[in-house]
Image 1 (cartoon, rainbow over the protein chains, first blue to last red):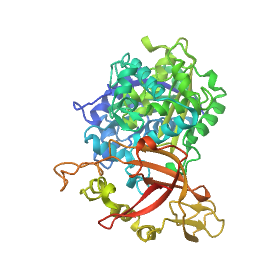
Image 2: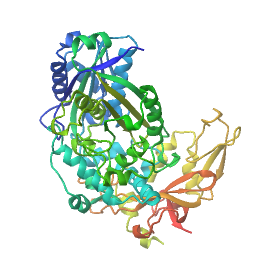
Image 3: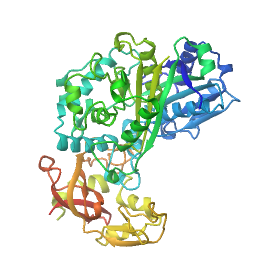
Length: 385
Length: 163
């Protein structure tokens, strides 16, 4: 396999983007990415597009809208899908293209426009990302699934609702420092704790946002990367793991098995340990998901995730800074864009361009992206060039 | 017996929402396990087990992924076990929410009801509504029984009740 690097990053403004269409959002991110790399689109050989839901865009092939609008035809565009992990699957597919020798320069785009449908319909579409046949008839929603994980975690390990809220407070703090974040406002513990219940025990501020947005990265082979970029960010380890469709069939309600499996393989491939990671973006679709991710990724022992956030160890300056871009919680979670956005953030950190949110001298970064309730998990480990 | 249940059943199942249990059975009517809905209406929660390797499945499956065999045996579950986890969803998906003006009974409001998963015989787990149990009294590990519930309009679902 050939070495692969990220040589360009682009990120659009996340939020309720009623001012722009799916394809226009994509254009913003792609333009920023190509400008960052200093590479014209005509040199890019192939493209991968991550869009999770045809339901949101009400179109059978939204990826065609996207490649058409940026003027990529007649070159190949390949769409991938993995619910909330769609973006990371696009990143991985782009990596496969370059690592295999199929192409030297590949553009990876993640985009979603979720707010054109009403919130109840968005809740509905995502709820059926559980098991539409066997679980959805019980009114399950995504907050509902993660609420079940939260209740199990609280019962088994004594995790507190306040500790969940502390994740929200942290991520809103960093979101306020990220100009691309959907919600750029700080919140305090009291505000988080007093928000209304969405699915017991998860409250409004425990939930990530329904967001529009796009992100793009340009991947290059070793030779091209060295010629294009002074600060290439290298893929060091990648892994994808899966688990059962139904949450009722999981071996545990307090851990995401696919995360543990993917972490094991990715750490091995990169030749690093959890303690070697300088900065991470993890899948905080709900605050409990971030706490479970701390544990599944080995940043702390199982059951200690609540204490890790309480001790502020996941802030910049702590043991392992996590989601210091605001996370899905505050930056927003446009499904297909999220995984690509994670790669953009880690690239910024490893390039030393994260401004106020910069983790000092970050050399190794990790992205962790969960699809659905853990049906698929993609983990990528990156190294500074 | 519908006194207490009446407060929430109509809102979810009779209120014109598209996701009635009928839809649940419709969702499986074109599958190889379509009989599950009829068995449920007859008061039985059925599982399948592989005739070759013995692996048990709930929800029922027509094909065994453990040994790739498709000869399955149907058997009813006793459905008693401990609560593994639960929640109470206050912000429902669209099918369960009453929306105007599309819904014919728009004056009926959705009333949330806890939902849980119990672990029963053979390590199988059953999801069900918990309409009769107050959220504050729900404890993980409590003993519950999964019971098929025929609603006043003939539709069927599964509820979890304290043994």
